[in-house]
Image (cartoon, rainbow, N blue to C red; front, side, top):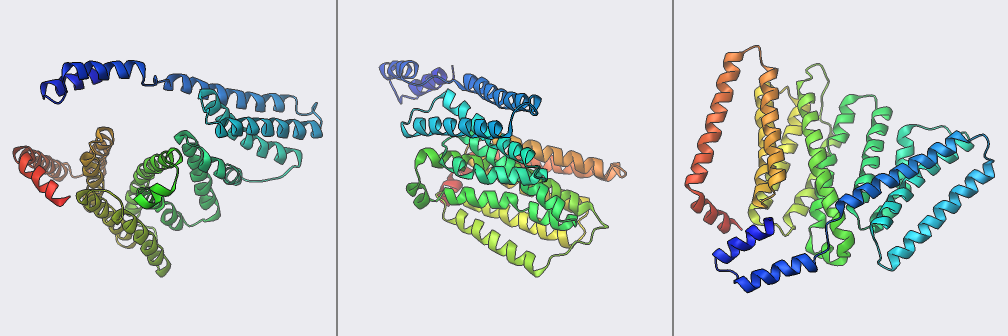
Length: 380
């Protein structure tokens, strides 16, 4: 229905004629591959179920199975499955079954770590298992052309690395400082992969899934980081300081991301929005760790940080991501309302004034939409 509506508008606008419209519809019905994400999802569930079921069977018959049989059976299964997947990869015959088997292979790698550690009574922490699993499957993630594999790897690495920091570093301030820089790191990698020279040197089928996954993780960890910054700014009893090492690390990381954004193929207005978001994030980072932020200032800067990505995604017409950041702004306002509920009069006046300001801005934008569009074109 969406395609038919678009074709109707194209015919009304005189872009195509009726015969061209019929040809487009015929091509979409006959040549375009069917969307089978539903089947792929069920096969993914089957792969996870098979992997967990195998782990359960081994655990249930643990004492009855000899050690050599456990290890030999595991490695035979792992090598056979790996060889089968490699054969499919070389022949470029990837399908839903091979995708599910790949997930099953990744789960088997994790099961193997548990198997060997149980046989030889090797102690360890949960984060050590995840980091080892991330190391083993890193090359597989690089060579796979599916975005899901990247998300699985990034999830295990993020949880493992964060857990390691939390257990190894007792000081919560240091933990915040390290983990809060994840979104900047992911944003830098995403922008670097937008570079045209890098894009030309990498295979397109491997390149695009990595860029999409990193972009989503930049958004996801960005929300976590902003929440953490707000929480940290409210802790008046914490000894928050910014040392020389912090400034050096921030400068290197910020310089990398700034350069990657500058040399990306984005439009000028989009680069300015990203540069502004990066600058606001670092300013809020420094303020949250050096001075006491009141609720109003913290809310104001948070809304600015969320507003710039919202405008950025609006320039790309990414409605879902734009809506996500608008929803985050509304939630931040609600938190502000709850935080200073003791002064309902002041809170109400501030929120009403903010709502009025937003309403007037929207009306002005609507009234001068053509002039603003021409101005944005000049900025490009």
